[in-house]
Amino acid sequence: MSAQRLVATDLDGTLFSSKHTCSAANLAALRMLGECGVIRVIATGRSIYSARKVLPLDMPIDYLVFSSGAGVIEWPTQQMLRAAHLSAEDIRQTAQVLIEHQVDFMVHAPIPDNHYFWYYATNRENPDFLRRLNWYREVAAPFDESVWNLERACQFVAIEPAASGVAMYERVRPHLEPLTVIRATSPFDGESFWLEIFPNGISKASACDWIAQQHQIRQTDTLAIGNDYNDLALLAWGGASYVVANAPADLHAIYPAVASNDADGFSEAINLWINH
Image 1 (cartoon, rainbow, N blue to C red):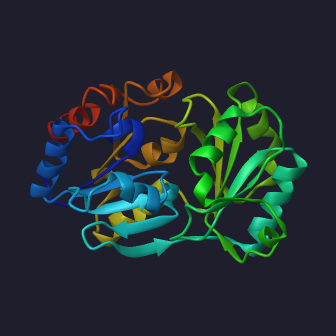
Image 2 (image 1 turned 180 degrees about the vertical axis):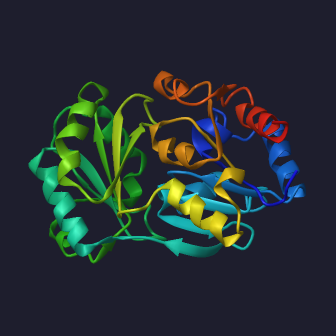
């Protein structure tokens, strides 16, 4: 197996089980990749603060791509390599669009403190928005005039009930160009519609491509594994790509599937890739 290869995997719902743990089989697969000289990347929507809560310092990976590509850390040294931010104008325009369209949202502080956020609530019935707000209550503050004066922010997270999520996306997306707008499924209730808004060009795929270039790894020598819509750019980028069995059905129509995140789908994908 060539050393000039790279594996990029989503974390929650892909590498991690539903209990947010990494199985022995998946850990063994990561260690085997390291022994073979393969670059190992976790690409997650979690902030660096949140990722550090679940990933030990001795996690057998080389890089962490966090906040869906807004940041990159070399994991063994914990050195921050890249951090992208929305500009003051991006913040103002995005907030105006979401407020005008009556969308509940959070705007996150700059990296590395992007677990802190300000929230704008329309007071419509939106249980998942309240669920996220209550979960992170200690780092949340209500939207106020200070937000309009922010010079930088990491991202926006807009949350909509599943029944109206696609309509909300279609309504606001044209007004947000050229920013990167990523669709995701709520990690809380597994069905609500999340819209994550980042600087133009930011994604898990662009961050992983940057890492591959640092190591002179060809795109054809990469593997991507994911489980949700926010992994679509990463899956499209991978030279080979798999989704786990718990991914939405329409992703199965595009990419070959392996076992679920609760049945070591990650290690299965690694074995298929190695033996292809």
